[in-house]
Image (cartoon, rainbow, N blue to C red):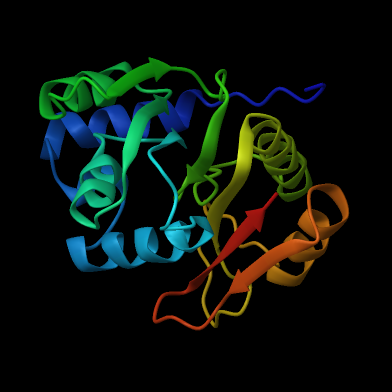
Amino acid sequence: MFPLRIDLGKIEELYTRNVQQYGIDVRSVGWKDVESQHLRFQKLVEVINKREDPFQVNELGCGYGAMFFFLIEAGFKIGQYIGYDISSAMLDAARNLVKDSRAQFIQSDLITRVADYSFASGIFNVKFDIGEEAWKKYIEQILENMSEYSRKGFAFNMLTTCVDFRKDHLFYGDPFYFFDFCKRRFSRKVSLLHDYDLWEWTICVKK
């Protein structure tokens, strides 16, 4: 199912170095401030039906587990939360921070357990020297993985191509391409959110 394997070593080193330097801090996961981090979460959770009973969550690229606290504070009923990350140092920080029996953390670059919803925030932004086309194919494989292990839906975000300045080590995703990809591959119920004050977009896919 995943013919293309990408070396994520440099990315793992980046976030391991970040958490060792900053600790439990938004800078460890590449964000400017808590407000922008929470704005991203607010867009991602639009895929969730708030009227539901307790549900299960996967987060790929969970960092130190900030989304778990966001979901709880926002009033969502979490039955189980599984966070996945490639950095063992980041996962150690998450386990030390999140002392809740509903939360579990796994070192992996793929989701391995079925949940109701899956999320990925910021994991597609940093590609370093990996080619654009190879990185795009890698993203498509990750979206296939998220869909396979999500019963009710999944959501992800990406830097937008609608910018006036770019950095070579970052990936900027065409929102129209990925909207069409998700419509064709996963569901008729796809939302593209590109109306908030960050240089990025969010896609929500409802099964």
